[in-house]
Amino acid sequence: MSNKAYLKLKISLKRSPKKWLITGVAGFIGSNILRELLDLNQTVVGLDNFSTGHKRNLEEIKKNISVDKWKNFNFIEGDITDFNICKRSTKNIDFTLHQAALGSVPRSIKDPINTNKSNIEGFLNMIYASKESKVKRFLYAASSSTYGDHKALPKKENIIGNPLSPYAVTKRVNEMYADVFGKVYGLNSVGLRYFNVFGPSQDPNGAYAAVVPKWIDAMHKGKAIYINGDGKTSRDFCYIKNVIQANLLASTCKKTISTNQVYNIAVGEKTSLNRLFKLIQKEFLISDSRFKKVTPFYRDFREGDIMHSLADISKARKHFNYQPSYKIAEGIQETVAWYLSTKRKN
Image (spheres, rainbow, N blue to C red):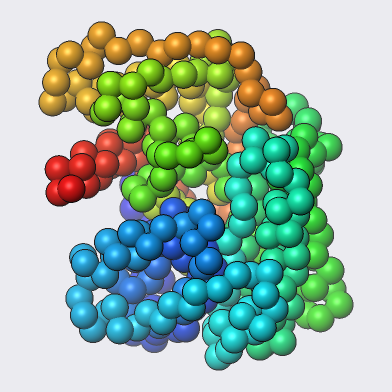
């Protein structure tokens, strides 16, 4: 399903390019946004310290884009906890897209100190530097973890519960800082509460890898696939291209009512882990019937996890014409295809 507002925006950006800053540019979400912006002939500054991002994500974009478009990208290697780096990176920027963070609920439970340093101190550095540089809008990656122990579904932006992890605390503090910066300094900001984003370039390795890339990689390599709980746990899985659309629409939306607010970015549909497994398996079965024998292993629920998550996306739809173009099945299809093509090349 195409989004006419987004198609119109892309034409407008090509005609009148802007200058963007992406923090966490070598990460999964940041690198995918970078690819789209360079395709649209935008000028992009990227900031990353490679703590969770990868140089290979940037190298892959360089390999698959024209030389002229790649020249529009300026990379700064540095840490958002260094204010001078943040100040340098925001110079002459129109829109800041703050994607950098130490993600993962389990990681934050194990290491709350560094999670706080990156996600709160780093966030404050970036929003303050953006204010000082007079950026037009500061857009930041918020999180569905902010809903905490609030059980009602679907999740609506104005009703949240108590946080269930240090990560969730940091993401809530980000929203509070953004709200204060709007009231005190007049900074225009938009927070996007991401719900279980997946897609190409997502790292399947490491203890804190997200479920989709982890299962795709395990399926391909014949490794065990583990489901935490009984598999009936559900999430509102959101394909990366929906997230890119949301970032660009929310950054450039001219309605003043749309700024200094937070929005759910998801599909508005819940998918159980059991169904997710079947969707991934289905894509592998296209090329090899032997994948039919693969079955998952069930184990205990993970600390800090919630049972169900589902977003109400009507606010984003109303305020900046967000319309997810990809449902989960289409996103899984593209993600598995990308993964397999990458493995063939390597």
